[in-house]
Image 1 (spheres, rainbow, N blue to C red):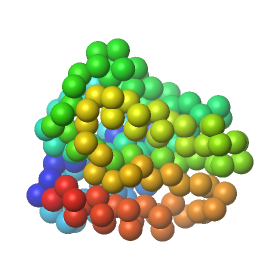
Image 2 (cartoon, rainbow, N blue to C red):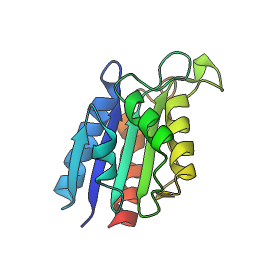
Image 3 (cartoon, rainbow, N blue to C red):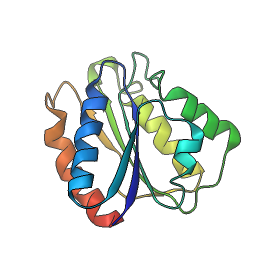
Length: 151
């Protein structure tokens, strides 16, 4: 059984919908999971010896959504080493905005967590809204691997 914090960055609700499905599946599988829609650094650090899953959309220029940005900034400023943290990142974007902007929020979070010495469970999952109209179809197989590896 794993303890997993699910930290969401969402503008129009798509990432939040995915995160709610993820939390439900984790709980059904016997894990302890909590959803954070306005995550703070204290919430994140509560999982530093467990697992964290960041699920985020990307805003227009490749930025992190407003509700997730304070967490990102606090982690970047305080720079706590997270050597006991296992993590995953699900990044939602639209490739029509260009390669540099596509899934930029998830890419930034993934890079920061690597710098903080957290251990990735899976490679970051980038979901292209131009290709995958139903993000769940892509998320669930990835999530199965994540669950298997953190259990």
